[in-house]
Image (cartoon, rainbow, N blue to C red; front, side):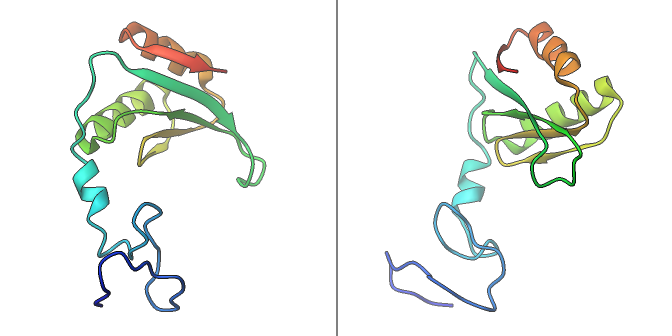
Length: 119
């Protein structure tokens, strides 16, 4: 698939998911791989929230606003899931955990010396 530089794809029925940053199909996107190695800052500010919308009434605890570093997020996701005894997933800039676990997650993050904002 070849497009001139600076031209965004508006609609395509065969390309699948599109990258929200560059507009290219996810399999051709290079911006997500370049951001995958963002440095982890010394002072981390995590945003904590509870989401229910669009999940069939189930609640999900979300830790967001983290650096886009795949290794860092995978390790944090595994640590939080183990500490809370629940399932979850890692996404672009954060971690989702099944259930309302805000207090447990807040305690874990504060013990790590992070700043935690939100509910």
